[in-house]
Amino acid sequence: MKLFKILSHPYTLIICFSLILISGEQWGGFYAFYLLLALPYGGVHSLLALAGFFSLLVSLHWVKNHLVLQQVLNVVGLFFLISSLYYFFDNDKSHYNLGTFQEPVSLASIIITICVSICFLIGTFVTPARNKVIML
Image (cartoon, one colour):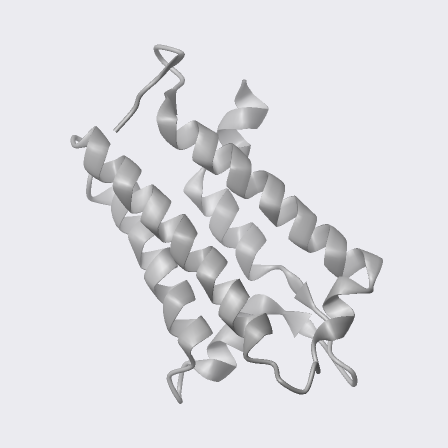
């Protein structure tokens, strides 16, 4: 249960998402680096990731007494993070970052992030104290 609490925590999701390895033709790096590079010119993927981070942090720190609002913010934040990755790879018309899906370490970082996202989504709707599912 402690491992699940760690895997379903918003900070774990944010860290895993930021540390996804992106492999380009010449060089690669962490996804957080690509997000920071796109922020000055307002890249869609960067703004979506920023909105997702903000939504998760608001849900964790400022909305503690409203369970339904916290669940909605968690789902919206996860949706923004997934949309960010989708737009990042979809807008790459020259297929510069295609190596991400061909190299095992980069692919493993994406798979780990998907597993943490699933744990986070489950942890959003199952309360550990009562061990029952809460539906919206």
